[in-house]
Amino acid sequence: MTETPYSGELDTIYDELVQMTRLVGSSMNRATQALLDADLPLAESVIDADTRIDELTSDIEERCLEIIETQHPDAEGLRVVIGALRIASSLERMGDLSEHVAKQARLRYPRLSIPVQLRGTFAEMGGLAEAIVSKTGSVISTRDVSLAADIARHDDEVDRLHRELFTIVLSPSWSYGVESAIDVTLLSRYYERYADHAVSVTKRVITIVTGAPYGGVTLG
Amino acid sequence: MTETPYSGELDTIYDELVQMTRLVGSSMNRATQALLDADLPLAESVIDADTRIDELTSDIEERCLEIIETQHPDAEGLRVVIGALRIASSLERMGDLSEHVAKQARLRYPRLSIPVQLRGTFAEMGGLAEAIVSKTGSVISTRDVSLAADIARHDDEVDRLHRELFTIVLSPSWSYGVESAIDVTLLSRYYERYADHAVSVTKRVITIVTGAPYGGVTLG
Picture 1 (cartoon, chains in turn red, blue):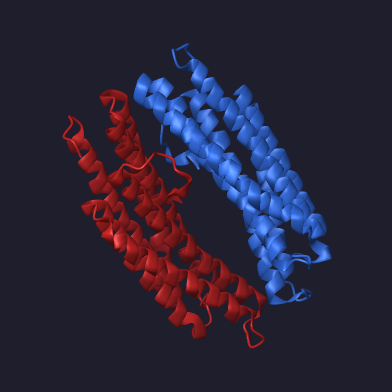
Picture 2: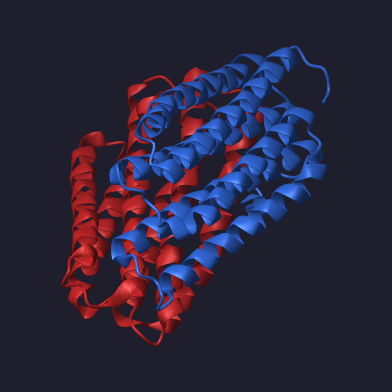
């Protein structure tokens, strides 16, 4: 990126976006753990922490707009600033999805929200979410878009697990009832959406790096 | 709003946002009809039409960024342009949710996706979605935020129906099996999210009209 008077401010904003990936990563990790262990205090801590993520998002948004307003960035600078705005918005949404998982764990407490038989699958989804968000953080901080292929592969894995869960809850051998089937389906959808948002952040960074047009419909 | 050299361009953009509310309104109407009647061609037409909504979104985004880049709007102008960007993004998402409903109708064709017993509830949800999006269009075009209370009330109704559907599919008398329970739950969630996005568009317009700070966490 060309050096501009506001390059330093932009670097700070992108550092904060990386920090947000850590927060929403930790949030989903702890939500998964709360889900697997029916751990109420842990679920509550995820729900409480979402305010911090929302505040950080607002803070980033405000400073992006300040740069636009006071620095009049050129086309390239504008792409970077607007990119940051959108990345912040996707990360905020990922935080919300972690919170949804935690709320589901809280809803069924002291019972487990998922049958013991599916612990492995959700642990796997949680692990994939962790890998995806950590690589998304690296893509933002290094602009090394070669990690995009990894992220896409993890996302495919999440999609596969999501489909597999549908098959399981719909099989005649499903013995946990309708409520549990719905819980599992919604939970699985939260992980699937979480991964999708991470992919969309990565695509956004690629757009910034390669200078593709702003609002292309292919950007997810 | 103060007259500025780009007021005309902004008016055009807001006209297009109103047009988008019509498109995503028609899309959800037709998706609901396709769902209620297991009408495959209608479902397909909703799915095909989503490309048009995505294109319009890209078009609006690109022109918002052009205004920022070439006209250097002041703080107020910037709030209006960035507001348009975000409204476009919410409306695009509403189009996606209509498409999800249509895809669900297509998935179960030639069967109905929902038990006949629930036709009334989904017809009601579709009607509320229609009322909400039509009033959202009025809020954008007139900036008359007094409709916000109506929209919030309709949204509460959608939430109530959404909760009611959970109770129904979880009751011991539910006789349509797990697959149908999941279909109903996901469908109901699409309507609920659709209404939420409309509420968030309305809040965005209120922020623009009242000049509240940009990225407040209360903006949904």
